[in-house]
Length: 282
Length: 148
Ligand code: SF4
Image (cartoon, rainbow over all chains, first blue to last red):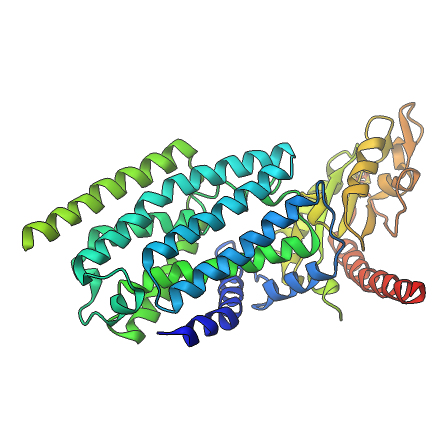
C-alpha cells in the first residue's frame, strides 16, 4: 500500500467500474427476461458522450461536476494508497457536495429536486460511514487504511454490526433502488434524470466515469471487512455488488424519510451495539 | 461503426397519437425484441438523447413542445417520425387543429410508415438512424476542419 497502489487505482478503477456497470446492466436485463446490452456497453456510452455537443444552462455547472470528478478520484486514490480513513471520508463528503452543488447550479426544477435528494442521501450515509471508520479504529487501533488491511484477523468477525450498517448504505451510495432517489435511474419519467438532467456530452461522461470510480472506492471499503485474505475479500466484495443489483431489481423505491430514518436507525442500533460489544469484550 | 451508433439513446414524444404507435414503441423495448441489445436506452431526457422519436400528428398545441424538445437535444441528433400520423398527419390530417406530420416543425430524417407501425419496421428505422448519427458526426467534423 503506497503511492503505487493509489496510482494503479486511478488507472484501473474506471476499467473495473465500467465492467461492473456493464455486469449490472446485463444482470438487470436478464432479471427482466431480456438479453441485455453487451458487457462493454457503458464504455460505448461514455465514448459516445465525448462525441456529443456539451449543452449547458450555465457554464459554472460544468465546473462543479469537474470538481466532483477530481475529488472522487482523489478520494479513491487516498484510500487505495493506504491513507487516513477519516481524511478519505472528508474528501468523499466534499466530492458529494460538489455533485449536489452542480445539480443546484443547473437550475432546472428536476436537477434541483435531484440535488436536494442527493443531499438527503449524503445525510443518510454519512453517520454510518463515520461509524465504520470508528469501528475499524477500535479493533485495529489505527485509522490508516494500510494498517487496517494488514490486520491479521477478519474484521467482519469483530464488526458484524458495522457491516450491516455499511451494507445498508451501500445501496444509497450506489444510487440503486430502494434508495434510487437522486438520479432516478429506473423511474425516469418522474424526475427525468434527477441531478444529471441538465448535463450532456462531455460533462455527463465525466459524471459517469466518476461514478465508476465511486463504485470501486465504495466496494473497497467493503473489502476492508474481509481484507485478511485477499481472494476471499475480492470474491465477497464482488458478490456484495451482485446482491445490491439483485435488490435493486427486486425492490420498490422508498420515500426519503424511510431512507434517512432507516439508515440512521440501523447505524445507531447496529453500530452502537457493536461498539458496546467491543467495549464489553475488553 | 462509430461510438454513436453503438449507444443511441432515444427520447419518445407522443404528439396526438391514438396510442397504437406508442404501444408498439414500448413493445420494441420489451423482452421479445429488446432494443437494449444494441445499446438503445429510452431516456426521457432531451439533453441525453440522440434520437427523437415522434408518434402522432402535430397540432397547434404540441408544435412548440416538439420544437423545444428538438432544440434541447445536443448535436448530432436524428429525428424519426413513427407511424403514418407522424409522417403526414394520417387519418387526423383533416382535423381543424392538426398541422400535419412532424416535418411541419422539425426536420425529420427518417419516416416510418404504418398504422400502427410494425416492430420490424421500427427496428429497421432504428438501425438506419444510428447509421445517420455516425454520418452526421463525420459531416460535422469535416465542416470543422474546413473552418480551420
Ligand atoms: S399511425 Fe395509426 S396507430 Fe399510429 S398513432 Fe396514428 S392512428 Fe394511431
